[in-house]
Image (cartoon, rainbow, N blue to C red; front, side):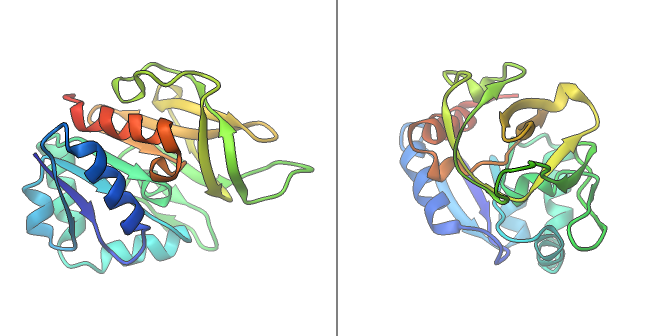
Length: 209
């Protein structure tokens, strides 16, 4: 199994690579960090990380020649299992509103809006409990009350509630996991979420949507 971890100068690749390599041993997975759209197109799993502001990440992804097209063909046409992490998850949305309105990939309908948490610090940073809204194979063995590690000021507001798989409470519900079909995204960082994150990664590598 080949797992493509997409490198477009906007993600915490080292930690993510180590976590996927660790959990990939049992799945006989080869984890490849790549900015080559041909490599991404041939992968059996695709992971899109992302750190920073939505517009910068979306622009950086678009500047990797042929990558957006390769991802679309692999994920939407060939149904390759896909995971977005942090801003990599947010880019699945239709539109982002951070600083300037920016089109997302529009693979899961919705918008990226600021977290509204009166009396609480933003960014939402640190450990928080998950609340599971819909069961999903990638969430097997993960229960409401389990902890994940977040660092973000903006959140994914999905159009279809069925696409909200889990949330956290931070002055109100804050989207934590979204998904549909062969696509899943986590707002939290699985590579920093210890046992929960490693279990989620292992589940993703075994997932056959």
